[in-house]
Length: 350
Ligand SMILES: O=C(O)CCC(=O)C(=O)O
Ligand SMILES: [Fe+2]
Image (tube, rainbow, N blue to C red; front, side, top):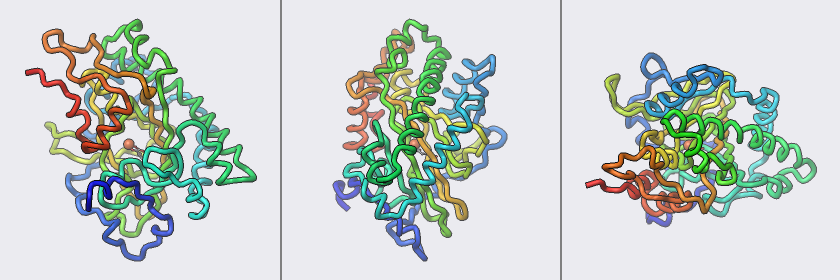
């Protein structure tokens, strides 16, 4: 298969979820590349209460050691989250031909289709996604000509509620590294007009042969941080680096009611000069339950340059990464390989 072919967006036609046996195009060979472990003992992903008096310290430790954590007492109203989940159900329950009216032409567009990561892989994922860049209004009108406003209102309310939370967490992350308020004000975190958000809704239907299909291939998110909220069905796994507790392994993210999963993305790795590391994760498929999730990405506005904070660079060594904009990073992921972009902007200190 040529490079061009593998990088075209692949829309998994929803009727494909009815396969009696999994065709080669959807069967992933290397799902057991690393052992899968449950989130217990040393593999228990931190759950952090946002009212914890030691919040700053705990978030810093979780970012340094894990690149992922769960948050509780986040202040987002359960009523809003219920409405948000209902709108996701409503969207993905639409007939295939209706959803395809708003199909993406390109992987990074808004609209319905495959997730942007799958284009780097030769196989189809067992998933559908709907991406919201600014307002979903135009698409919602095509999906529900007579009743499009409730979807738009709930999506807008969700973003409005999540934005201060995202800002707060990014702020706390930098404080944990000893970055001063003044220095934070000079980063995109100090000025929300410099932050670009993307909301992605994902649907992973159950599959009788779940061990051979994959919802989302291994990847790191490319922004600063991402909030994942799901419908209580497990499926997200994170890749834990080799350590004293075992080899490289997939840890299943636990389903904890009333929490969000927060993960560290590529731009945060650049900004913190590698003190916080992006986190590789994937979405697996269940045999019985249909999983739905949303990923709310916080990245930088298209023209904002992100570079390592001077406070976090070693004066003798200098920054470990070159300055980069979010579109440049995406472009590198596109033209190199999805997992080599950060290597490409690494500054060789020798
Ligand atoms: O579905 C999930 O749990 C994760 C989604 C995700 O990783 C993404 O959209 O980038
Ligand atoms: Fe992701």
